[in-house]
Length: 194
Figure 1 (tube, one colour):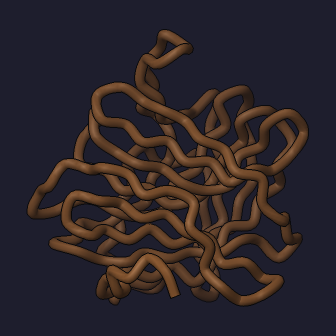
Figure 2 (cartoon, rainbow, N blue to C red; figure 1 turned 90 degrees about the vertical axis):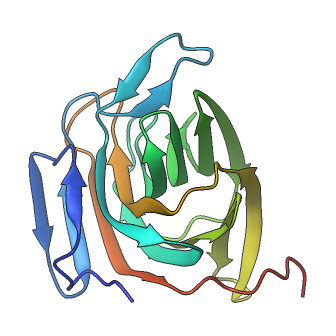
Figure 3 (cartoon, rainbow, N blue to C red; figure 1 turned 180 degrees about the vertical axis):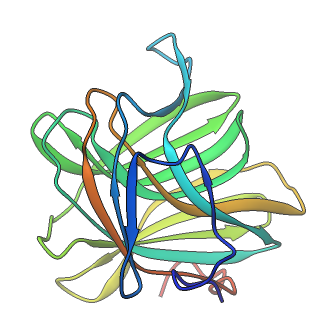
């Protein structure tokens, strides 16, 4: 199992500032950072911050995210990445003055989905699971303690992928986010329903 205390994590696009604490990672983002490919906005960005490790086969990754969301598109969560053209990011994103659960699936071009969820000042726990050619996205509902489904998306089969913590601030710099209790372990059961 990988945790924040391990040294096998590496940065793609290191942020201007980050600090490790007691199983936490605090990040302050760089200017106009994002991961996006083409759709609707007609631009490509691959300069978001991503602290990751390589994982083989199926897995489940979890992290709790707490951020100082203030500006449009401030975002933080988990990412699974095969290449610049194939990745999934999922987490909390600030849109129209509210925090939404946001998922972007990119297979050459990006798509974007938003779900309104109860926001907690203590942050939100996110889980990404790889089941062969599928990525399953969930969040932990603090009100009832159950994992809620958000997305089941296609992802190209591969022997390995990079998985880890992602944050971006497409319209500013200095978005501050804290990740805690990051873990990567065996994939949860394939059962979708209790």
